[in-house]
Length: 446
Image (cartoon, rainbow, N blue to C red):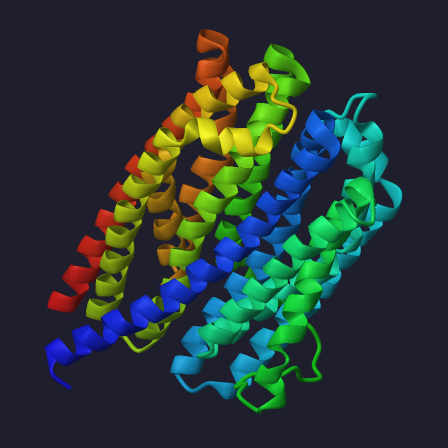
């Protein structure tokens, strides 16, 4: 095959995988946004504040699922490209074992500690009960969330990104429909919102069953003991995906704590609007990153470094174009976007959220760059750079940045803390990537 034909084939695969992946992750993001919209309409500012306090726990659960799914599926893609069938099955089986273990931990938290967790996250007397209800049932549905994340990653990496996308989309749209049905006609309140959210991954899993029924799968569960070295590799490759989700949770917890002191529950509700829109924006970047991961891992497994770099270049270019368009959209329509969620026409809520949305999303391009670069390092089994970048974004920088900037500039500092953190993390990320690229080029010359 000529280099031009290879380039066209690579670009076509990039478009196919990223488009389907972005559609799927957008669907998942939109069902959290649907929760926000319907809770705001049905339960007002207190419901919105309670939901915002509970969302970090969803980030932890979803992050665990992605850690296992991305870690296992990355190793699966590399072994599959090298025709190592026995290793493929071993990786999948151990990933399922890990999913069961983590699910059990979350279920225990849901049964015995949801009330304490709600208080720990900042729920006061006005919103403690509804926050507790949402948290308890979110945790009890954790096995469905985690298994769904694992299967979506494996099915996509098994050459079926279309089915993975369809499963994600149908599960998400079902959640939106059920949200409306449970909250309004059924008058189920906050329980209706979380019940709809919990059923969504169950529906998604059912939609993926044809991958096995038609015999399209190249991996299967085998009877074996859990293998420490396999588990270690899965977790090592998946930790950056976990940290990416944990960082969203850490950001929300940190910001909620600071904003409660500055603006109270109204400020938290305003941040809830911004944070949920941010889930959609991050969903686009995560979709691009997850879409290119199977391609990068496959080309890396075959030793085709030129196509690895080509796919990364495509991803970064598309990310930059989307970032510019997204920020323009958010800036121009800030008033209208916030008004959709401001059912009570709260002028204070409107003002805080509109100002925040224009400042917060300056971060867009830096967020996209960091997410894609982190997944790139994971895809080529460079776990240390991926860990460093993820830790800088999610834990090391954001907490001190939020407290320092909010102390100096109040709410303006809160909104800018995310941008400053992502920009600061992007600089060492770029330096590490250039070192990796230079080392790769020197190895090729030898």
